[in-house]
Image 1 (tube, rainbow, N blue to C red):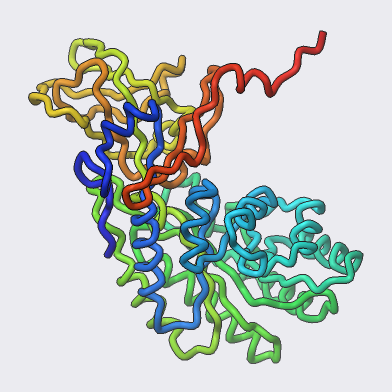
Image 2 (image 1 turned 60 degrees about the vertical axis):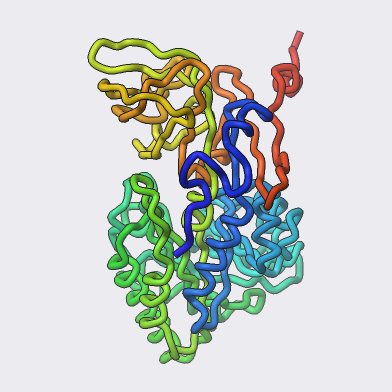
Length: 415
């Protein structure tokens, strides 16, 4: 297990209140040491296996974060060519990049193949047809892994569940489609078969769905091998969840034991795409209290961070632990922590127990290192939160906060 570097009011080396003062709020703060520890913890749990790890860039695409992980030997799991460019800029070589997602354009596929991408996870027969044609036109060999749908309920939020037949992801296994398509891949001269992939969803807090999915995948791979087809690898995706409520460290060891028990000595090279489990606990969002409003039976703590800065609570009804960094006396009434955006759904937390918060107090939203900054927008013409990285006793500005003038300069008046 790896410890959360943001437990308590202090980051490893820097007081969070001082960071809010120096860099303003809203402010995302990441710990390089935390990212390294989490990555190493995940890798150590798989040390008995022939495995390769690709960080899911969609969880946190900050160039500085990707560079930290690249120096640890991580590859990248991407879902757009833009993410591929980010990964390469951060020092991740193209041969260590996996291209996932259901809607890759021809331009994205051509660019990825030209750059020498390591693996494309294909998700439909139509996509495979496009890959074949583009690879033939470019006179290259496309490394293709077939993502399958094993129809497993991940027991997660509906909007981040991807393992069931009712979702848009993967090729069904139970009706024979996956087996037929994989054989077609093996027979095409412009495709190098890389194996099979599965990813059943995000924020899984139980291991049983993983085991069910992995056994289904292994069964299909063994049947294909028995028929004489080359299945060199199995991409097991990501999805390992974290404990947002208690901020307990991720139990990488139990996950590693499960994978080792199923795949040890089976002769497959394994791929993994962790995202949230590496990133979430190693980032926080700092926000300043603007007003405290008496709502009768509860308080409204109005802060300068909004749904455009952290969308998860509004989009997924997600829970983040929220603390006040100033020592205050207890307050008997619960508090809703809300932002200034003109939406009732603009909140960071509802019905929370907070002390006697006052104007100017800094609140810390914990476990915000994944699916936080990557989902920011400029709704209500609000500049995005800045992002900084703590590296030992150094502070690196990864993305400064844009001014309103900089934001408006992106547009043009037509008349």
